[in-house]
Length: 73
Image (cartoon, rainbow, N blue to C red; front, side):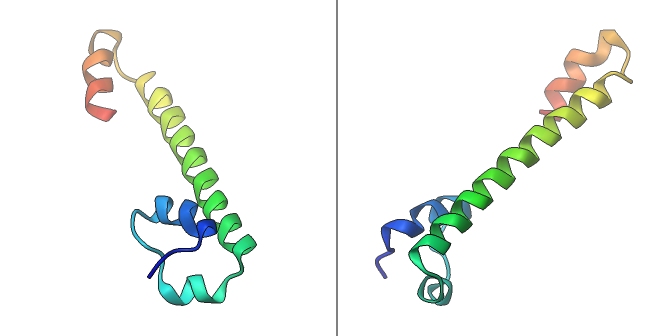
């Protein structure tokens, strides 16, 4: 099935073709909005994870931080 151009962002976020029923059900604008929303959620999640790692590293003795950071990231 050929994806409409508006579903390309959603395809990228899912890592595979979105379910056919979803593509048929949603309008072009809704598909675009869903893809953009998922993209923004992933960016926020990544930023929150980076912040959590940095906060956790403050509890690790300085001499071990580099090694622990390599393991966590």
